[in-house]
Length: 507
Image (cartoon, rainbow, N blue to C red):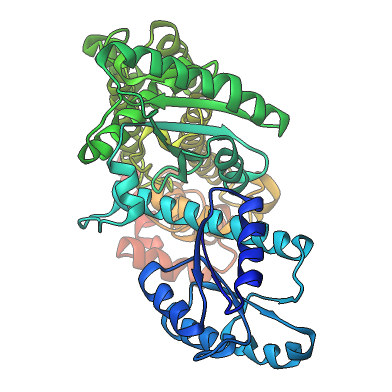
């Protein structure tokens, strides 16, 4: 922290200098004996706080506050005034004066102000460092060089990609990590919800290759013995964490970020809160293309056979095998992509009969855990297959209705009554399903059945009159029957009856 103390009274100024030094010997103190000198130091040194007496030659404290507010609004200003000047000092409220201190000033007055300012400066510094880290990792443009970005890129570092199950949410986690790891920088990841990016600086010791494993072990120890217990005390836990390699070149910051993400995926696969370093992902985990292809083909076969339970069990079994055999992150990512493609292809096949919501291709890090990933995939499998089974059940209803019409065609039949009283479905939905399957409306189908029955009776039962046939076929209106018969067959029912009678008499 840098503090400028401006007072034309030497003894009074030195008394304030001593109080500030007693508060913290690390404070950089600047002194000015008048307002103009103070303004010059403000312009050249940009202090964090200006403690100024109200009465000074050349430029008094009020006007100094006005000049600072105009040119450096981020600098905090506190005015020191005697009791008689206090009302005058309050005029500086328009210049965002931070505080008013009465002479003779005591430590009890000054120290709370300094404590509060230190907290505000630390919070501002953390915010700037977070913004700098975010710009370095995510900005598509060249990141501007600032003191904060220079801090991130001018020394050795590692990146940790971690997921903390924290009841208070990301903000509480960030605040706690800031306190536990004061030199580190922590931000919520921009792309993956629930994940945090931790920039960890190395110590100022020269880092030779022989010290790299020791530093990695120290970082693991920091995460497991310091962070994990702290999280548990707050009702949370460190769920997954991936550690990048150690680098000294700031240009490799994004490269380390990618390494940490890959290691974090491997941490997800391993489970049991295991922390994984990137170099371990290249040694212990395998990629078996044949195993992946065989599983995918079997999964697709089960989908198309509408075997919901078997398909769901395959997903669970794959995830269990992945943990057991430590499948590699690339293998698991390819498995996820292939599984989503299989589900989308299967759903597309039935898209004309069911409403299928296509699944978006996602990274494994979009899922909090592999268990949740499995639950979501299994839910998708069961949903689409259940919809197909439901559709087929509705199709069976159509067949039942057709069979009912074929038997009871002579009775009064309406689709609405069949839908509501017999099959307990929505009439309008059943009407659409019936027309889709049969190719005509229910009323047209009923008319067709009755006409065909009437024609058959006229051709084979010549002993009946046309009126009797009309009644037997389900027509109560004789005139309507004659009209529709001629419209459907192109001749009157009497001609078909005469034709049948002549055929029999000629035998």
